[in-house]
Image 1 (cartoon, rainbow over the protein chains, first blue to last red):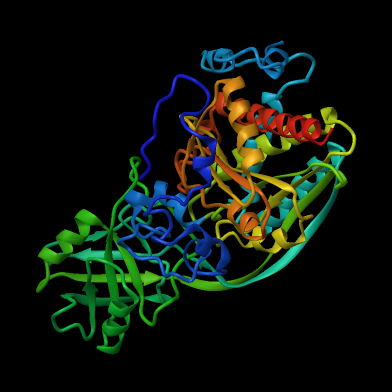
Image 2: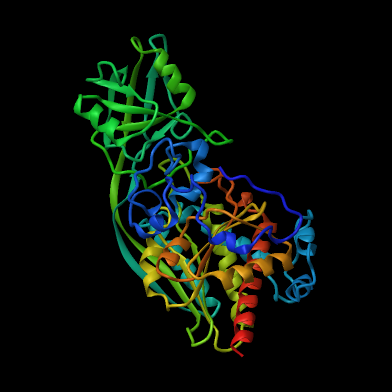
Length: 72
Length: 421
């Protein structure tokens, strides 16, 4: 689950280039973004099978809103 | 008026201050700025009953694509459909699953998507199957087996040992729903159902006396998909921009509507509105296209099909969710530095806060194709439940999204053009 920061001004707090960095662990099935994008099937477009523990692909509803960033 | 001020970069917090007011801003300056009425109409239309939740391959999904194509043509774009086929990617609930739990004292009919739902790996079980309850490490033959977490190995083991099916605990969202998804792990050999965590515990306590009767009318379907691709300005030798948003949803269940207003009718509305504004205001030589993508919910297959067709070097901006802005989640891929810089400047001008955050949506397909891309997420309350209705889409967020997209592209084009000169 992401932690949203309340800001009082627009734009990024830090460098915009931080958005280019790999998402933190816990993104999609714990896989790297490149792996997610390059594969064609499975969780989040990967060959990695989603698991209950990862909260991916609707297997854990508490995490499902965050898992939007998980299973497309 | 407000829009013109912001476009000049002088408004700072003004846009968000006005957008945060109770009153809804009127269309600005003769239609120059984002038209809220138009965006709201798009959200309402896409969430309508006749589009049936817009799942890929359904009549409602195809009708939504046709409607969007007409809309885009009405804004002056050349439109074509980018068609593809999905095999084995979509799980379809074709009847309402049933579950009855008898704890040995009384029996209760459980409510689908409140008390239980399909597990995406389930085998099809069309007709009710009654069986006792058991633990995985006990005698599982002829029993519904209670397990604490999903694994294909555990499923294969239970299947091999003659289990009737698997029951896996699952939580609910703040409104008590189990969000629906349509793509998941490979299907296993036995039925698998997810049960609300507290009920799962009750079932475990009833082992010895408890029985469950359930169905899992779920099948894997092969379906056609179609992206709606609109060319407002043909690709040129200068800056080319592609704005994208997926229009598909997870589709209605039998007996439940899934309007998909936030995910992603809201994003579609903002993208189309931004494109309409940009078409009217970009300098000559700038390419501008829109791709409204199908099958994102099935694993971003629409964008996977479309991305290789895009002119190399095109800047791609994907919007997934424009319904509830705290701060916009941004994820970039490819050589997206100029795009990020433009986005940052636009956010500062408009007072829209941005944060680097995972945004694994269609943007990743374009990044994987080597295109500079950013994915933007601006909230989707009620995510993939019947509660994801048009009233959950905030006016302020729709305006902020369209304004952010517009200002970002204007900044990007201006910066690159100046650099080239």
